[in-house]
Length: 235
Image 1 (tube, one colour):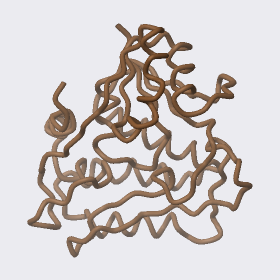
Image 2 (tube, one colour):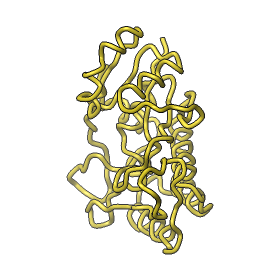
Image 3 (cartoon, rainbow, N blue to C red):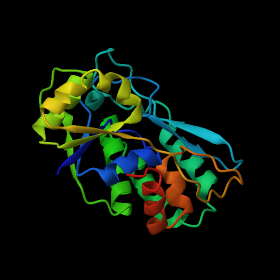
Image 4 (tube, rainbow, N blue to C red):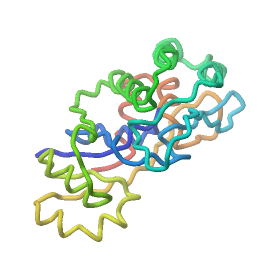
């Protein structure tokens, strides 16, 4: 049984993103499709020192509408790196696991990667190592795909000999229309229904869900963080 999941390489994503990684055997980074602005690819949220949600957004160089994710350039005309690091520092400097997590984020951002995908994947790999993830990762861009939506998912699953596809719940509408095609290929489609469970957040007494993974990593020890991530979905 080879369980596969497909995700765009997002910036310091939420807990549900990592639950998919824990559950699947083969993880495909969907980096060849068209970039969409104002999505999780270049931004995410933390909780600031006042207990409020705060956006961290990576500026990108303006590109043609059909530019693929793996060709999006980061815009360094403003000092956003220092801004992000300062925001993270001020928000989490008093958290119990700050010293072990902050340097990893700092070193990745200060490398000033040219491509957005390179920065995101480096941060994702660092988070996966912290969470003791030992899985096989692939990039969709290493193959040539011309299909879209459900057909694209089917083509990728077929290419990687996936028996069960673990899908975002938000994709159910368009996936359902082509479900018979997956059945013909003997590929079972399972939808993630993720509900974050509360954990310690030093900056607020009222739990705020759906924050970046760093919010959890700063506040809870690794073993507990792993349990918290996995507990959001019951299989």
